[in-house]
Image 1 (tube, one colour):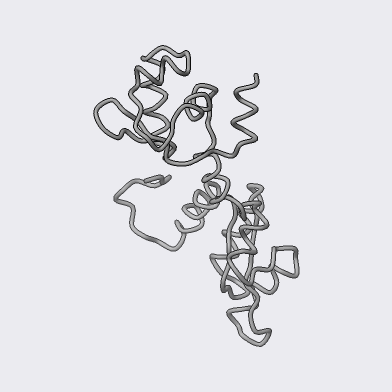
Image 2 (cartoon, rainbow, N blue to C red):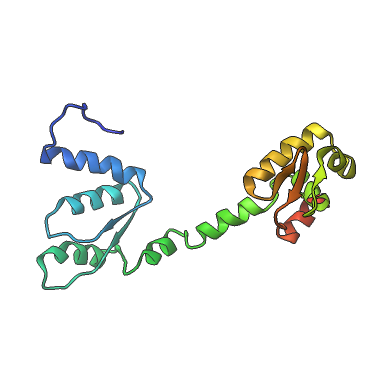
Length: 178
């Protein structure tokens, strides 16, 4: 919990802008869905702008009182939002899930790439992996643990391990050639 007020402070309207300033400061951006010409959402949007955050707004009916604030924000430069994808695109987060999945699948260190060359879908004992890969068994076991967390390998039986999937070849090849 983050607050500039004591825990026993009553919820008074005058405290909301101070609270919302903290919230907007912690965010990458702020989306205003509906706002009248004078509203707390517009105060928070102003805080976000002052903090260098992106401000997004959903357009509304030009005759609706609760759309006047959002429409004015758009008129003054807020990013018009129709779908969540608009925000993700503006924040360069459209490929975030794919990027995380790729990072998890790609060997992070050379030892992972080397072990992937020696792991198959048939169980192989860590001693044999170490011998085949030319790595110390202690390094093999710690590397396999990290590969298990990433979903690249898993312990099959006893001290034997199997590969779960292939990494993108270009990266694995780059690591082993250095």
